[in-house]
Amino acid sequence: MSEAFVHSYDCMPLLLETDTILSTTNKMYFQKGKIPMYRVEDKFSCCERDLVLLQSRLKSVLQPDKNQIHDNGYKITSVYFDDLYDTHLQDTEDGNRLREKYRIRIYNDSFETIKLEVKYKKDSRVFKKAKKITVSQMKQLLAGQCIADEHPSTDNTITLFNLAISNRGLRPKVIVEYDRAAYVFEAGNVRITLDRNLRASTDFEAFANNNQAHYNSIPGFDRVLEVKYDEFLPGFIARILETGNMNQTSYSKYRLCRELKGGIN
Image (cartoon, rainbow, N blue to C red; front, side, top):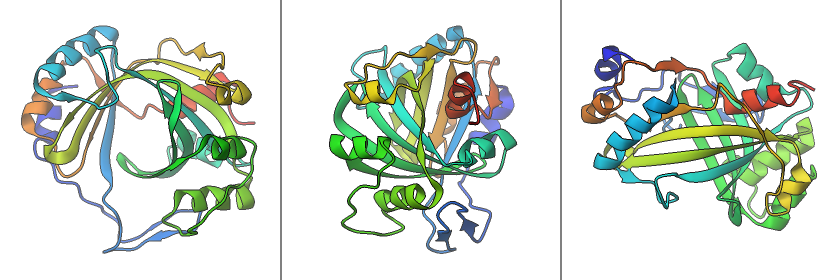
């Protein structure tokens, strides 16, 4: 990361360039005037020394994320789904501008809060739909089964999952786990995350049993800084993030973990 980082991010507005975006998976249109705001999500590869330096700076001026109970951060575990053709993995490998991901996410090995998420991405712009589900619903989805949908709608994450399961054979493909420290700033809805110790598993049955799955680590690609915000990133935060050693990357945890577990089926 260089001085250009500071200049390009100082109060940078979020603009959506296209009038319409077509999701090839669920055939849903986001029409101009109705499209939700896409957040900026930029990623930077770095070493442990940089992460330690940045964390010491961030915690002195920003608030820790609500999930973070100590400096070591918290654990994130996500089950990623893909279809019969591994469309989402292929889109990532091909560097397609429009991509989407389907996943189930828990925190700190707890099933008290289970999030069902569909994440849309256009370049470095991200929009996410999320809904809480039960353990029983989670197990049904892991088995490739649709779950009860009381309010079918293209705005409903359950509807989107059910359509993908029925129409495209959506199934769980890999479990992605890592440790995260996160800091937030209200203006601009800024969120800075520092991720470490990326690891992967395909033991879905053990995951459903209190996350007792065995994970394989991914050395060499396990440290990344993510910078997320809505309309702008305050200049003082951009300057805090300047180290001179980091490079922006298209880093994909899902892709790395799929490759570790054999790649496209």
